[in-house]
Length: 373
Image (cartoon, rainbow, N blue to C red; front, side, top):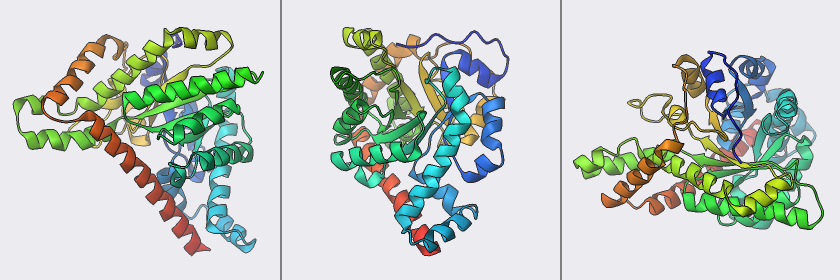
């Protein structure tokens, strides 16, 4: 299920990371990045092979510059409301990024060269509406190397299954718990099985599962500090990496199963774990923490620009830093429970907060565009 690392011998740190089997994606997109050639340079010089977006990224891009002003005025003059304008602007940027990355998509047989666009975050708890909008976005962008982002909420699981069965490639976002991640893998497999049962091919269907990393330390570290015990202090800055490593362990478990083997024989593509939220929030931690400690074949790391720059300027990572540390990761999570912090409660809270943050960003973007109209 996990591809073998590349044999590229380039000394460039980002190429060395790619050689370990980690696909480097950029967690950002804007019209300025496209127009200036910045994204093209990152593809050529920093081994970027994909792009992810989210409502907060589009809010920053559209409200933080005048690059979209003329199109907003034009669309408003045509009678478009704020929601239609935002849809036009975001799908246009994503379509252009898809075209830029299409050579990567072709060279990697569809594994990379992907660009993500998210369904309206206000639909995170509405299954049918999520399915409908995923279909709309897939048709509107009209590019085979698109990934439609669907949150891995309870309501998102049946939506993921149906959209995969439709032949739409999916980036499952806002994952925090290993238990939910296993449910997401099940939904992906079920969607592929439904598609095969309907007599449809599955070779072109792709998926990643985005496991949010840094936000876990951001939530847990203050709780550990409040406990003020040696046992709690020893866990500072370790829980997010341990949790992500256990997610990769779940990925390996499933890769060895008969269910996946049967799908792979029919042309199924693995649903790679993707490490998201990899920018450190604590200045005391190394800026490459959530990259260097999460290296293993068959993974994706989507990085904000500052993290990508830090990786490019750091010593090259050599070797798998996950697989040999799974026992340590489990011990870390066991210790977290022993000091009195309930990981299940924390991850449930983070999912709720994550949906709310994206809703707030989307509503803020709509309000800004509406005012500009």
